[in-house]
Amino acid sequence: MISKALKTNPLFRLLFANGLAGIAAAAILTAGLLITDVGGLGHLIANSSSPVLPVALLFASLSITLASVAMGVAVMRLPTDDGPDSGHRKRLPPLFPQKTPQRAYATVRPRRR
Image 1 (cartoon, helix red, strand yellow):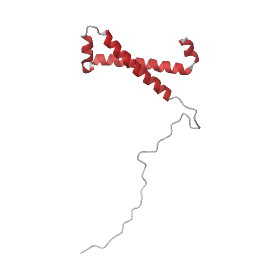
Image 2 (cartoon, helix red, strand yellow; image 1 turned 30 degrees about the horizontal axis):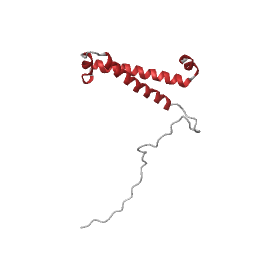
Image 3 (tube, helix red, strand yellow; image 1 turned 90 degrees about the vertical axis):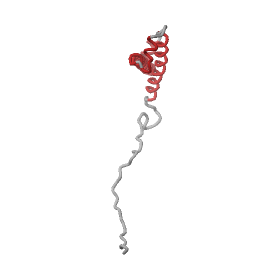
Image 4 (tube, one colour; image 1 turned 135 degrees about the vertical axis):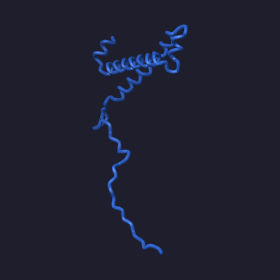
């Protein structure tokens, strides 16, 4: 059933591919956290009586988070059909507009003695 939906529905295929990318990123991040021993996490897990459970919990929570982020970004980047500029970002005005030179006028007063 899933393979049929993947072949026929491009949106489902997009979400599935980005979900897998998020899970792969979670696997890399989990391995990186354990290998680099951030905050002593790798040492704690390696010396625990059941190291599989904390690794599984860490991987599952990172997988849910990163897969959701990847799918959300994919959906937000889809073009819309709302108007003539659909799917295109509107440019923001420049933060610091380019200044044009202006002539400065000053009045000269006589010196006091």
